[in-house]
Every structure is written in structure tokens, then in C-alpha cells.
Amino acid sequence: MTTRLGPQFFSQTTRQVARQLLGKRLVRITDDGTRLSGLVVEVEAYLSRGDLASHSHRGMSKKNAAMFSQPGRLYVYSIHAKHCLNVVTEAAGQGAAVLIRALEPSEGIQPMLAHRGLFAERPLPTLPADTDLKTAITIASGPARLCQALGIDRSHDGLNLVSDQRVWLENAPAVSIPSRVITRGPRIGISQSTELPLRWYLDGHHFVSGLARAHSRGRHWAFTPWLSRLG
Image 1 (cartoon, rainbow, N blue to C red):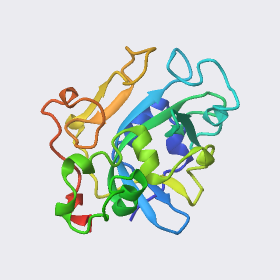
Image 2 (image 1 turned 60 degrees about the horizontal axis):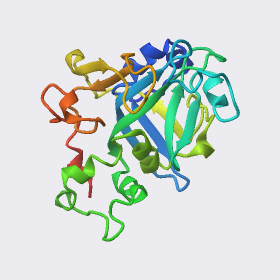
Image 3 (image 1 turned 180 degrees about the horizontal axis):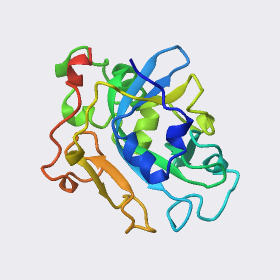
Image 4 (image 1 turned 90 degrees about the vertical axis):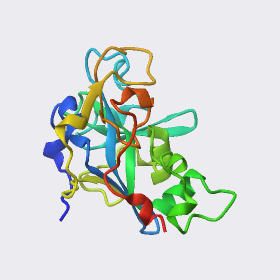
């Protein structure tokens, strides 16, 4: 049985929420009722104070207003015509959030492939052999890719993850993460406050974005043999 994450979870410190999001399931219900989901394998925290890379650093604006809303809201921003999603944390008015950087897809993989346009020139895969691992790991490895795969855009900005029926986060009881694989380090793709160790990811996981050399033994594992479910 799965349980949806409630307001108490999101009201924790941003660092706590970031670390504890690893292994949680992000769920998206599309307009036609299709359930898409994936397990969180990489996140970054953005703080309300002392963090020049945070969108809240210069105060609240029309674009980042959701980041200052109640904990558990979704903050979606656009960059280069693509989108990234963040989970608002702490108390209202703080301006803190966690960016979800990567997922291991677990449900609705074929629709995700279609959303990503990975098989635009030929039919979607019907057998595991139709999709090589190199292609598969690009489904939701990276913040813009996962938003595209799930069909999330600025129209979802401000959505309440605690009560909304389109997007939410839930526990995944069958998922167990050894503490030794939880790794923390500097965030990537930013130019300010680069020294802050506010990125958490699962060491060696196939779907973590960034460079393979950031892992102790490269990328070599996933939670489930999900390739067998592509059909």
C-alpha cells in the first residue's frame, strides 16, 4: 500500500526534504487518465538564505511566486522553452524548494517515450529489445527531460501536491535504499553558490544525470528490471 506525502513532510527543512525525496514516487495522471510515475533518484536543494543560485534570492516576483507559497506546492519554471519542477518546502514566505532532477520511470513508460519524441520516426517499442539502455536512460534523466516525459509545464505551477489529483508524491514501500549509496555534493548547471553541497543522488544509478565519473563505479544499477515492462 502506498501513502501520499502530506504537509508535514514538505514542512521540514529543505535539506531534509531533499534527502528524503530519494526513493519516493512522483505520480502524474494525464488528461486521459493514464498514470505515469517514476522513482526519484536525484535532487537539488535551493535555500531561502545565503544561496545565490536560488530563484528566491532577489525576492518574490510574478514568475517565482509559487516558490514562496505553502509547503507542498509545485513550483514550475521555464528555461530555454523547457520546464523544470520543484517541490516547495519549509514555511510559506520562505522561498525554498527542491528541484527534482531525475527519475527512474516505473509506470507509463510508452507514453513517456512518446512525450519525449524518442521514437518519432518509428513505432513505439513493443519488446524490450526494441529499446537500448542508452536511449532508455534519457527518458527522465535531467529536470527538463522528466517534465517533458510527464507532460508537466507552467500550467502546473502552484499545484498542491498534497491534494491535487493530477500530480503528487507518494511513498514506495517496496523500495529500499542502502545509506551507502546516498551521495551528496555540489549542484550542477549553475554559476553561483557552486560550492554548496546541496545535490543528493544515488551513487551508480543509471538514471542520475551528470557525469558518470561522479559515481564511485560508474552507473550500473536500477531499482527494478523495468526494461522488461516496456511492452
